[in-house]
Image (cartoon, rainbow, N blue to C red; front, side, top):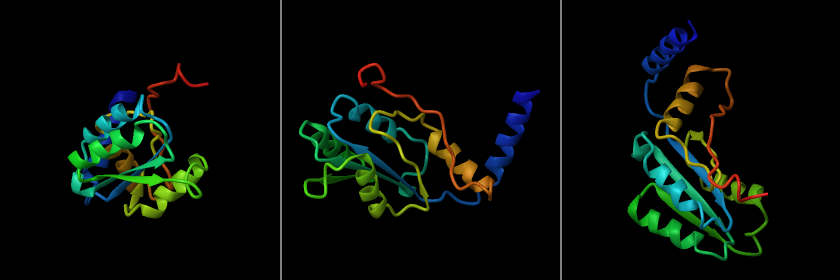
Length: 153
């Protein structure tokens, strides 16, 4: 019974998407060279109109290859942008990096991912559908997968 209701709701939501809102995705990243490529690969595989996407990687004062990897993706995908922070404004932690990313965001919808998240290809689409179809919703949370869960403490 639940799966039938889910399918009916999903079909109704999909019919009720008058347009694809623009989406900004700020990703704070500090010394994430081990995981950022997988994250950006997932971002490049999102099934959402790319002209409506803005992926903002905030390379927050990294001293590894994070910035280099991000710049390589930015050259391949015009909707991926890299913001490099340095002291005195950079390196102040995740919240400061996110605030920097939010200041550069242009999307109607903001989806925040960590540098070690790899969203499913349809994740942004379903998150947007949830917001569009629930006028009371101010935020939607999706399931995510952490790449280095066993490596970080």
